[in-house]
Length: 111
Length: 117
Image 1 (cartoon, chains in turn orange, red):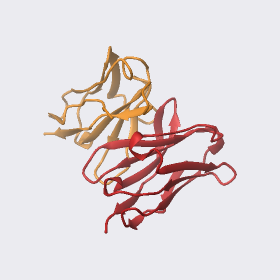
Image 2 (image 1 turned 45 degrees about the horizontal axis):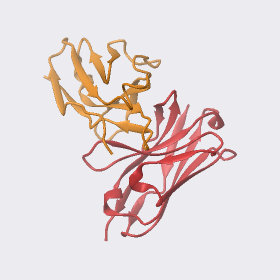
Image 3 (image 1 turned 135 degrees about the vertical axis):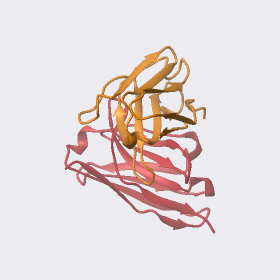
Image 4 (image 1 turned 60 degrees about the vertical axis):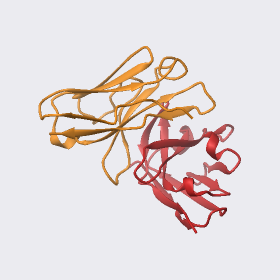
């Protein structure tokens, strides 16, 4: 199965903004507005940060925002804080045999 | 408090079977699709399976198709994942997750499955 493509790592200093990209195809990100983003700390379960491309669940900081253009989705974290250091995964619903797919994950380091 | 709690993981030999359970509480279970997602040690997330509200539809990732089955008991607020013919590459933490608008909006803590001789 082909997954979504994310950069392996990104980094930024406290207070800065970073963007994590998630590239798919016309069968997933390009076809549906069902892109979601997850934050995962080591040894912990993932937590949804963004759903339906840009919707932020209750309790998630407004420093987190999502967008999409064509086959690529993006997660932007503004005003970086040390506690943002974690792994981030994108996911999309797809029209293929495997109806959901994840990206490989991006490790965010806050310098 | 809304929560999902997985159980049933453990060590099993290649070719063996294991049944995972996911117990839900704190929300109207019957209204939600439930997924299983796994994560191999040091690796990323992989979607495994889904069961819809009335169990009328189930779907699996190709690598487990024909080996895993998923079921639910809405009276007991639980979902099960029956895993047969287990292989070393099935070794992972298995999470159950609640679906909302095609996102995984509530996760359990996971249960570890190790397939090894």
